[in-house]
Image (cartoon, rainbow, N blue to C red):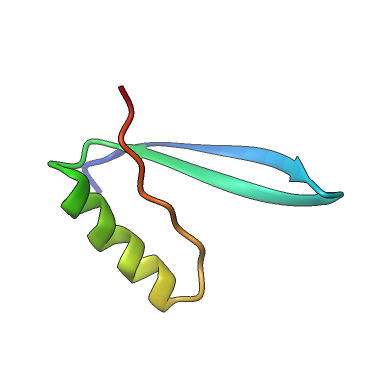
Length: 51
């Protein structure tokens, strides 16, 4: 709800997938909580810190 998001279409290995990039988390733990929710719905998620 309060995050800035961008969805990017990507191709890898001949397959199309969509990458969600979201910013506005309080910290890495906050991002990991979102990933845990997504993974519970069988969606891959990798939290990263941008610099």
